[in-house]
Image (cartoon, rainbow, N blue to C red):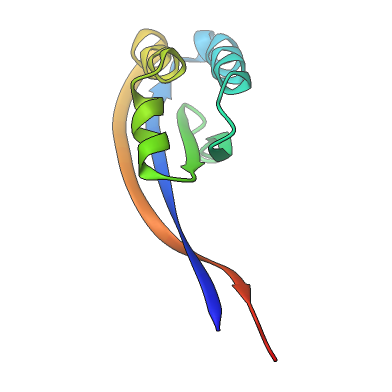
Length: 105
């Protein structure tokens, strides 16, 4: 028997100008320090062959936790950082099923 858990995610992508990259990264880092414990994973990555493109990705325990986060100041800070320091391209919200444990008797 296996135990399944639904994980909700938020992915934001956009381009950040060269002169603002450090400021953008520091802003996202600061916002991430304030995330609630319902956030399972949070990371910021840059595309290897298009270094101006950044992806912010987070995973949440429940849809309610993700929806609450989207109303928070931390979310607004990250989203606004894309707009002010570059170009916000896409925001994706969704879920996936993660296999957590497999029990073998």
